[in-house]
Amino acid sequence: MPSAKEATAARLAAGPRLTSWIMAARPRTLGLSMTPVAVGTALAWATDRKVHGLVVLAALIGSVLIQVGTNLHNDALDSERGGDRSDRLGPPRVTASGLLSATAVKRGAIMCFAGAALVGLYLVSVGGWPILVLGLLSIAAGLAYTGGPLPIAYTPLGEVFVVAFFGVGAVCGTYWLNTGHLGVAAIGASFLVGLPAGAVLMVNNHRDAEADTRIGRRTLAVLVGPRITIWIYASLMLLPFAFLPLLNFALPHGRVWPALLALPPALLLVWRCAREPRGRGLNRILAYTVQTQVLFSLLLCAGLLS
Image (cartoon, rainbow, N blue to C red; front, side, top):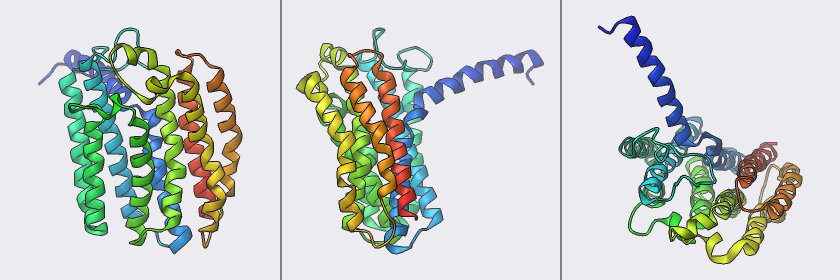
C-alpha cells in the first residue's frame, strides 16, 4: 500500500499528465465536430419533426471521438515527421514538447477511434449500411490525415477533407439517422456548416506556410500563395451567408435568418486576416474563426427550431 507521500506525488504527477492529454485533444476546436450534429438534428426537426435523443447523443460522442483521435494522431505523427519544430508558430504540441511519448499519444488515438467504432455499431443498427460506410470512411480519413505514405494534411486536399467530414458527412449523417432519408435542405446545410470549418484549416495552413515549405508539405496555402489564400479564406467564411436564402426556400418549417447575425464578425475576421502578417498573430484569427463557425451554426439551429 503506498504511503501518503507517495500518493501525493502520484496525484501531482497525474495533474500535469491530464493537462497534457487535454492539450493534445485541442478542446478549443472540438466545436467543429459538435456543430454539424447540432445542425443535422435541428434540420431533421425543421423538415420532418423527428429527433431521436439517444441517436443524437451517440452521433455527438462518435463525432467528437473521431476528431480527438485525429488530433492525437496528428500530434504524434507530425512530431515524428519533423513538422512540429522549435520554431512552430502555432500552439505547442505535446509530443514535440516531450510532455507525452509518441507511442502513448498514438495509443490514445487508436482508443478514440475504437470508441467511435463501438458507438458506431449502435448507429449502424439505426441507420443501416450508409452509416457503416460513413463511419468507416471517417475513421480511415482520420488515420490518413497525417498517416500513411501520402498524408492528407501534407497535400492541398486538407480543406476538402474538413468540408467533407466536418460538414457534409456529419450533417447529412445525423439528418439520415433522425429521418431515414436525405434531401436538398440537408445537403445544402451541410456545406453551410462545412465551409467555415474549412476556413479554420485554411488560416492554420496560411500561418504555417513558410515552415511547411521547408519540410516539403504542399498544402493549398503553400501552393497558391498568401494573396489567393486570403481570397479562399474569405470565400469559405462568407459563401454560407450568400446561400442562406436557398436553404430557406427548401424548408417547410423554421427560418435561417438568425444566422445572419454571425455576418459582422465573419466580415471583421476576413478584414483582420487580410491585414495580419504570417506569424503568431494568426493564432487569434484561428481561434475567432472557430468561434464564428460555432456561432453561425448555433444561430442556424435556433432559426431551424423556431
